[in-house]
Length: 613
Image 1: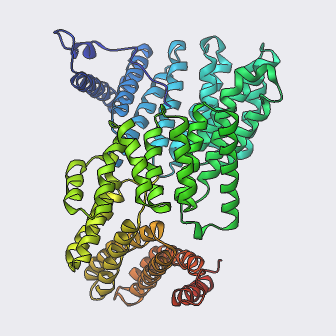
Image 2 (image 1 turned 120 degrees about the vertical axis):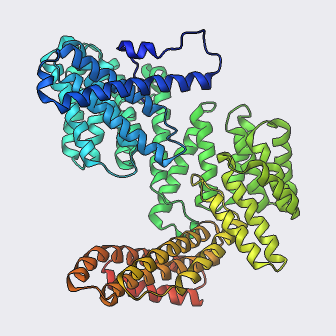
Image 3 (image 1 turned 30 degrees about the vertical axis):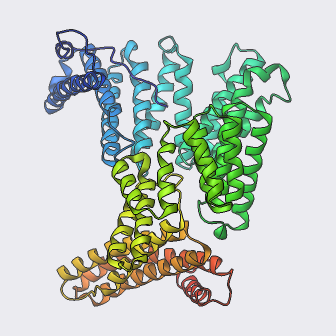
């Protein structure tokens, strides 16, 4: 969670932006006016700095106090504008916020460069924090920005050694130290990270503390680092940090510290289980290898331990819910998932997760026990949590069960464009597609399946999939695949380029459809979908190589194209190999099937081509 940065220094321009009359009563309008104030101030500060950069000699004539004030205030304005971006809703907003935060970090460092005691510590601290937030918003690795953040961390600690009196907040030390360690881990510099971490945990930063207090402080820092590395996708490191935290202060081993550390130890244990879980792909049980299954078993045991040892604690509730998700989404065991969800709803009826658990218990009962049992859960949901979003989903389940097209249409009309209901709107379209297909209208069915995939795929976290959804994905993928196969490649370079772009779009469509079918379908459909996905990837990779040779380009162009395309060719062949492998694993349930034979042939051929198993 970011540490808020407040505007402490404002030029008269910013003050002039404040409305003259009364207090605003509309929070949305107040928020928008505040954003406009930051935007106007940022424009002013930005123009000031641009002018200074345009005329380098001007900087020498500006007092350091003024430069530090402008840089610090500019950084704060940019940071506030970044925080106002709806980063959870739009990739464009994430990118914009990241750029604003990066610019804010540069502005803070401009303030720090003026070497004024009252500015250096808050400016460098703020620069590290906004750089780190910019990195967290990025979808791809930004090694250059990471290096600048590490350099800012080094500046912070160098300045602290040089002027310790100016640095009086130990919490800031920990923030910067943990960012420094995390970035070193992300860069693969484990030795440097661990050396710095050990020094930070044991040296001057805990001087004067008694042994118990020091151990609690060290454990808290390690748990925080566990959170950071977990969020960064460094799951092995996260587990190590949580384990070290628990080893330092274990309530069972040291009863005197039990009350002070019990909550943190629960959280650490919960996050260790999450870290293990995150390493296991969310795929049907037929694809799980022995290693992944062992990891899931350890996760389930860890969650079970939390549930029994800490009844009533929030992590016990979360652990029950996570166990339900694992049985539902990973292990395809609806009866076990139903039991976990039902226990949560029964034992913790006042928890925020109770409505979701009750609804998912009903979903699992539909599969495991039948509609009458599901209706019991859905009835309790409407009676106990009638205002919850989950209660809004009961009419959808009733319409699907009854084959009520009008009910499905009403649900779609009511919930279209609501992110909470994306996957459920998708399922409603899939159910309508099945009805159209049953009525002998394949064109209408394809149109509805396409809408189903578009809506369902908009929400990727903990997605729920039904047979109807799996079928929609498969038909969508098959249609794209057939169109893809119908596009020929040849002619001049401009024609080849247009044809490749068309085939790429269709290949992406086919791959999305087949992978969705594999994620939510029964084993037979999974194997068939993965076989089709493998054929798409393999054919596309080989076609890329053919285009280089037969596209009619000059020798120099062919050479450039070959090296540019060769990497992509290899990527698609590897993707095809893995798809054949998963098809083989699923089809292995029926080793005499044609799917099993074709998957085996494809996998062996691509192992020879790629040279890897």
